[in-house]
Image (cartoon, rainbow, N blue to C red; front, side):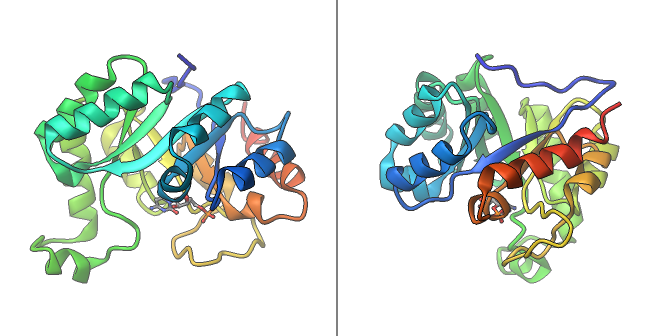
Length: 240
Ligand code: C5P
């Protein structure tokens, strides 16, 4: 199994490149351009629906780690079965929706064994107070994030995917141990696209992020490897 870090005293953040591509060929071309630079990729709903497990095999064939971001949410038995399939495919990290409840989260953790890190998604960044109300959840987004995160910890999840906005609160409330994986990162001066809660690599690493999930700032850059290296350089400056 690949190493998933999370030391108590020094945090070395890593970059995960989102392979948000329409086909395996497009994903392969992006990985070709990042060869010798990136070593951790995220496969999400778009690419997995298009290419299936071949997308995971393509990442593993390059010796890179893979984060399967399918945000699983189903009955505990079905989620556990999907996690077992992910384990068999060599997936290093895998997401579940914590709104699936404690039994579902615990079933995912048990199925993952020690080889795949289960990450919980609390409240999607596309949701706001009105979305929660419409779904019958009263209280603030922050309260719901913390409720689900605490439940996830009790169920044994290894960490969370969270926005830069929630990162300080989660780190303060949950301590050093959980892995915090942060998307929506934008280097200073970059196009924010449709992301609303963005932060720079420096900001999220200073707040205790373990992994930065970066998509378009790398994949749509004229030179993806140079864009990757620029972000890495920004992060490394913070390491003591
Ligand atoms: O292109 P960009 O850097 O915005 O990509 C961010 C990646 O992180 C995408 O794959 C997106 O689906 C994912 N993500 C996100 N916000 C969340 C959860 C996941 O942007 N709250």
